[in-house]
Length: 556
Image 1 (spheres, one colour):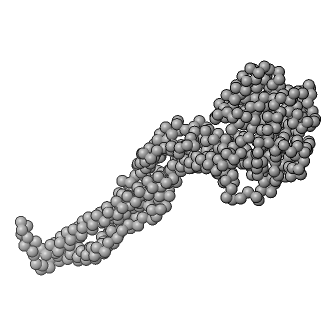
Image 2 (cartoon, one colour):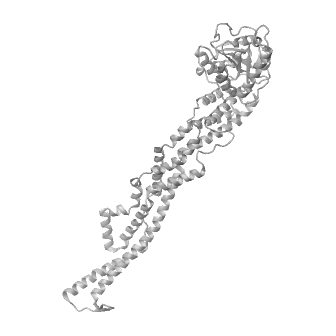
Image 3 (cartoon, rainbow, N blue to C red):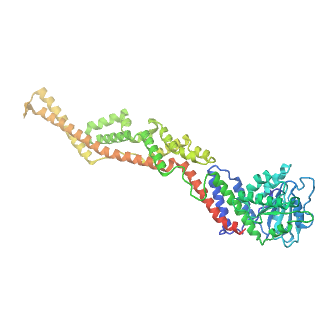
């Protein structure tokens, strides 16, 4: 049975107020934010899942693994602790092909589900009472010629609670041991020790040098000062030098659950720090935005101006004024005006020059919004260059021109939808002018008939004495007077309609401009805002994990 095949434990005992549970919850939030930024989260999610499962297993013992290269004597150390052969040691290498567990007999039953989860089938129990609550695993060699042995170690390392790193005076500076294991795992384990086996083969001075070298390297790789007991020199020969020191370290009053919690906490903190580092975030300070407020405001202003040039607010204003004048003509120009309005509508002229709704809807016909797209991309170019290399691809993808253009087009369409149907305003004055214009038209008709009768029949008609012209027949005076009255009324109607239309057109213009700017501010940078939010959530989750996991790391 593999690790993945093991049964799931009961995790009901994890209290909602528990600090480690809070830490685990923040880890899930961090992974979600990291995925939005395009960062790899498989390792952190696995640590999160393993932490939940591990805390659900019962028992009062923690699991310590003996990890080291070929021939360093891991099996011999386990046998020396046991006082008998638990794991076969041999000159044939590698000897250990599968993990072997040495557990307290009192904990064997409760440890069984945990060992099944770890995929450990060979189990030996003991009655040693002075070692503390620890189950020791002898693992295959990390530098084995058999590839599956190293893979088995790498599969188990994230799930054990503590590690004894085993080396010898010949291999303690080995690159595989340091670069591929210690450097990666020291920050992820709260309880660990380095065992230098075969110390009887070197002089006392060489032993001191080996210890000093290791403690210096471990302090550098772990980011903190070395501990006096972090390195134990021992021998598993008949003298068994150092075995008592190892026994003392194992039985140093450690609470098993604290070790388990400490390992989970350290793993989560290390994983969170790794992702924060890859994202270019310092957990100690809030991340600076990709685009600061001044740059954001400038980008929005520039994009809005470019979009409004395409929408053509001046043309919209002219259409609104023309629509108002058309409405005024149909109501205030009398019978002739109504005929003129019908002719304009029938010919399509009114639709072409006096329909602001149609003009708005067909904004795409008047040009592209490429300049608006480029203004946004130009504003964000500095943010892309300063971003962490790991998140540049997803940031650049969010600012892909096609997506920005679609976002801006949707913004304009939403604006038009929010503005609604534009109905030209009306005025009661137009009806009064229309009534007067109807009377003037009737007067023109009667006067024209009178002139015609006067010309044909020459009836007796009075005259009107006019300056310069002298006496003018009354029919002509009447006709001219009504024509002049109609002209004055038409000019009055046009002037009033233009005034009313101009006021309305300005309101329409301002309304559209404001709506476009608001929508661009809210939506045009939405892809960037989504990444900004993810980065802030990643930083927040990292600081939460640091604080929430700290008590468990200290207790371990």
